[in-house]
Amino acid sequence: MEQRLNVQLIGQNALKTLYGIINYLKHSALEDALLQLVFFRVSQINGCAYCLDMHSKEARSRGETEQRLYGLNAWRETPYYTERERAALAWAEAVTHCEVPDEVYKIAKAQFSDADLIDLTLAVTSINTWNRINLAFPTVPGTYRVGQYS
Image (cartoon, helix red, strand yellow):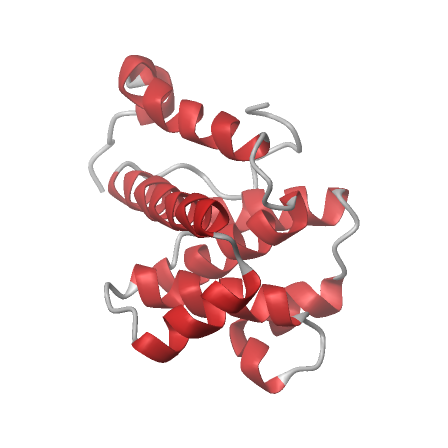
């Protein structure tokens, strides 16, 4: 396999915008635990091992349970998630798949304000971007340390 560039080191200027989005989201009204679930679920969909490693570690460091992380791939069939989390997960999946049905929109609007829904969409699109960068320029999973990019 050909050695690919380390985008984390070389692409710092380009990545500043993405870091800015994450910083903005940290100060949004969306709960950090909710954001970590969304980041983890989207990373599952996209198959990004590095982001799965990162967001599982971040979520656990903030008190997330193993049971909820392990069950996230089948969240619809489990009792572990709140209605707000379910709405966010449905929204994240729909936006990731580029198709938001009216029913998903209705459920999300019942749980989130207009501003929160914009922020949630920004969270979903940003993790999709990070996933794609880490898949294009592989980063070794297992190396992330909690708070490494804070």
